[in-house]
Amino acid sequence: MEQLGKRPGPAARLDIILRHLSPRLAAAPAPASFPTSAQVSAIPQPGRFCYTLDNDVLTTEQRQFYEDNGYLLIKKLVSDEDIERFRKEFVRICKKEVHLPGAMIMKNESLRSQYGQSEKVVNKVQDFQEDEELFRYCTLPEILRYVECFTGPNIMAMHTMLINKLPDSDKQTFLHPMHQDLHYFPFRPAARIVCSWTAMERADQDNGCLVVQPGTHKEPLKPHGYPKWEGKTNKLFHGLLDEDEQSPRVHLVMEKGDTVFFHPLLIHGSGINKTSGFRKSISCHFASSECYYIDVKNTTQEHLEKEMAEMVHKKYNMASMELRVGRSSCAKQRCLAE
Image (cartoon, rainbow, N blue to C red; front, side, top):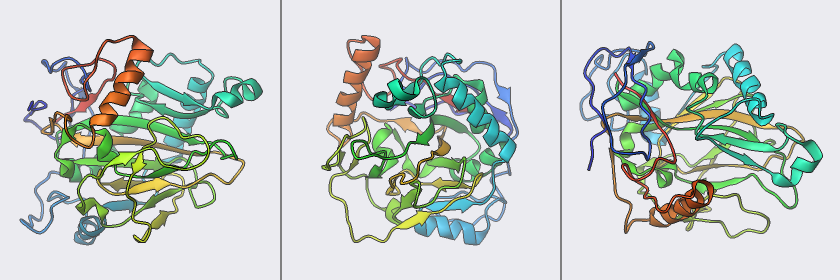
């Protein structure tokens, strides 16, 4: 298994590497500098916490909450000004005023004849690492300050999304079934991966906020597949095949700028949007640069590899692809290294 470049040095340095599911790892380009947060050294508590690192950012109470529940909500972390900039860039992408190589732009095609190229049609922009404006989210000091508490100072931005949850209808639902994000990632260890998810406007039960099952980050990766429900299923919106309906759930009601950090094994999803408006969020999955890729053959992730290979062949006319490093150039990753 292949190590993703260890880089000694001060915690302020961020390396930008184009690598995710790409040709074999090579030397990194010159680093771009952004400030990260605290030194991961203060208040050592060896053996007490598995999912956070010793630092002077999180309180003991916050670390214990994440240890027990697998998520941590930080209020008003991202400014209104930054969120407005992200929103404007999203609108530009929807109008095709921005060329975004490598990104997957998901649309409700049935609405295009009614609304044309607009935000009323696009429900997700995925892998936006080539868009400098949106990728600023992944380099915000206030975000990285917390990310470092979970990954350590060598930080990689692995997967990015801006979700524009459209209103649900009788024929189309944008509900995302309960799932574990690690299902989509061929790298480990899970404890050094974290998602940063920021609400770009109020998210509640009416417009389909996040729903989490606290404590499920301590469970193994479970088999996923498409849900058996009526109506259209969104591509790659996989869910648990054996969902525990009795497990306690928490609806994360969030205001604009609120940010939740959560573990990749935490079971979560989002509800339907019962309003006539949109529910936007921006997120990034970060990982330690010391994480390594795995071969998904003979695992619960193997069928996902096959589905992605079919999509890649259709879009890029590539003969083959494997869900691990060194086999495909269909997607890219940026590494925020120490």
